[in-house]
Length: 128
Image (cartoon, rainbow, N blue to C red):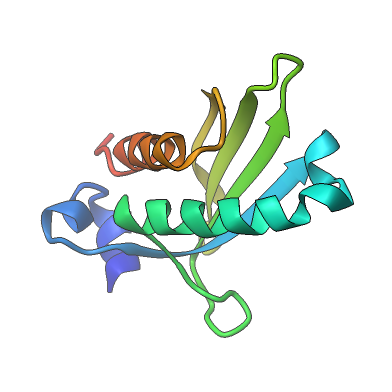
């Protein structure tokens, strides 16, 4: 039901207090994929998923659920020790990109991740 509402009117989900069930895929590029950072990545990923859920994007298990929408987040570290996050939300049923953007984050601390998720949700749930 939520997927249909989102397809018809992106802003309707938030107005109704509902979340969009999506498959979330997180990729780490460059030094972020080194073995020593695996523990930090898991902790950051947990915070990020909670922040996205609060922003209206509910992660579902892709193997158990045929989610219509897939959010791919590619996180890479910049030379200045900041981070770029490329966000791609795709509609697998229509085979189209719903939303794309690149956001720059100064770090991956909890408050920054929550701000990121809120900003992403604000862009995704806007009626075109």
